[in-house]
Length: 354
Image (cartoon, rainbow, N blue to C red; front, top):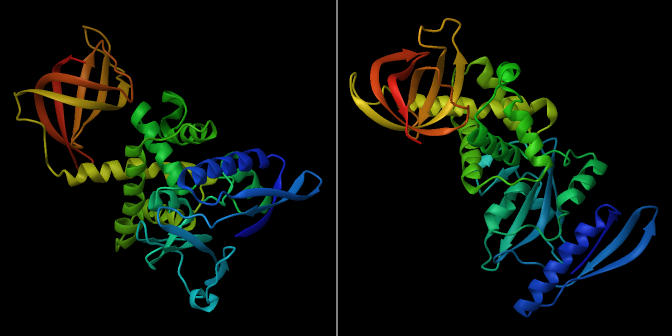
């Protein structure tokens, strides 16, 4: 295999580290180790050549990049690979991993050692095969290369940004733009900052992000009479392979919309019967200080959600829990009510057990 590509001085250290890792792995497997040769320099850019065995990803190998633009597809075979490009001229920008079709600039064509062929999105390759594309720039180098090409690669992918949103919402609660002045930085801004400092989201957050994406591009996209918000959300997800600054708040709002949908699916499920003593493990979604207190102290209204997606409320006197915190509560069911079509269990006389 031979592959030549220009890299900037900022990208070369990450590339050398990546190749060193590949060489160590190849030595353990007894395979031919790839080598990196620097051929020429022009300013702060260096033309390098990668020579070695074609990298295989858990039995799969990348055989071509499919570039999608204006309803047509251009197939760009990887070094050492040949394929009839005409067969892929009408390939849609689909992903066999998630089963979704949305606007993508590039997908990857994979071939398994068994002869099977798959087409996956560039950001789904690692999930699909368990490994990254060895020929793709990584880290700061990838962002730098993307910015230089003007492809928008400097921005996080939709999946990456959604996973960061899920992680921030789980750790600190969800803060919408309308509540930012009262509760601090929005979840969208915190997610962007999280990606900037390269803090990884957990597996559960990535799984939740995929669930939200499938919900938006599946159920919401199929609704016959979507609301204006739902139509805009679907539009943003369809056209956004990468999440720019202008779309952050809208993409982040999908977490809250999906959470409300999950709650609605719970139907009229209340927690216990009126008068029952109940134990509930809950997450604090929202807290507001009521203008009128009681003779025993200031009253704080808490909006809570248990692990089954059911909503609870607690009017606490002299006690304010932090948004995003999880607690074990023991209290009495005061009443059942509905708020914006959602079942709400109102608690009283609660004790925080943990």
